[in-house]
Image (cartoon, rainbow, N blue to C red; front, side, top):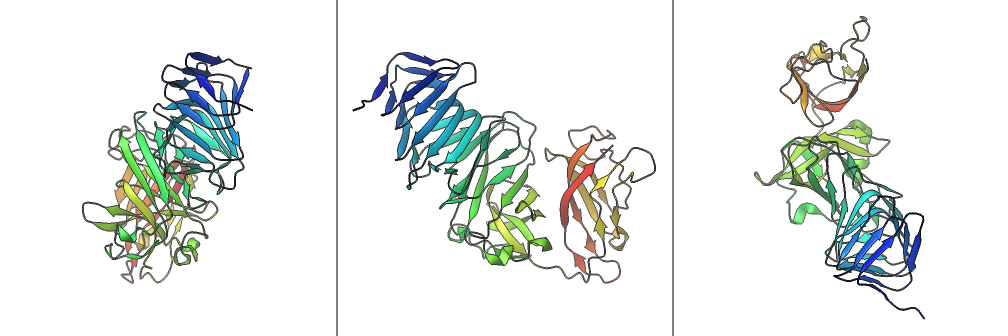
Length: 390
């Protein structure tokens, strides 16, 4: 028969040392538990004191076959953590806060904090492994810092990630959650911009900026044929899938646009605000033909070959407007009536200096084509990636 493990003093699991507890581990308000080794937790874990690491090499493993409750008054700080519970129920009930500095390994078992008031936190540059329909976070996830981050979130037994791009401020804090629910009850779908044809009526995401300076950010939302309506997924290659956001000021859904990646099953857009997001189908424009081709890579090195960003057929849309953003969401180039002349020099009002040569890398563009010069038909806005290779 095993008894509860109670820590009232200082317990240090050093590097290359293994610790395990079969029954509940209770770290009291006078207890300090440091893990730089390999700790196995086979039951519940309560922390009212200090749980942390010293050298940043430790791994805490939550392993079991029945429900494991993670409770207490104070945040648990782990360097690496593994969740591996084979219970047929949702095995991890998170009442407390967990902070991960390096890797969260979701080998088996959903971590549910939505129903228990807990919070899952990833520190800057922390990441995760093995996320799936069977192992993710069901509830809010907080992401600290400026690194790109894919949220390991889901609901109803489905993993449905959202990804936010790299930002410039390490003090930024973003919070994300996925809801397998129809947003129409709280955010009426009838209140929308005219060009939005159909709004996803089975799911939505909340992406909030909790702290940090104002700045644009690039967001990607995923789709899944098991949860996303067929009206949206039936023809993803058409680029008519878009991200829409509920605008609290106007009390309606607005179109944020989007670049579709069929392989990754994502839609990516440059945000104009935060809050409630979902996917939508946008009305087909009246253009009669796709008479333009966008080339996604150029090499402005002065050799006379592929030195500028080329859009074949752009002359058919004289009222076009091109905007280009870097990975932090800062505009680096803007021109009305684009004429294939951009050579990778920054000309926009951004954090970069005017006339600065932009470095090799990937940039995000928004091309508002406007009306065709012959037919007068309005072409759809195009978004996507440009790669500058010097």
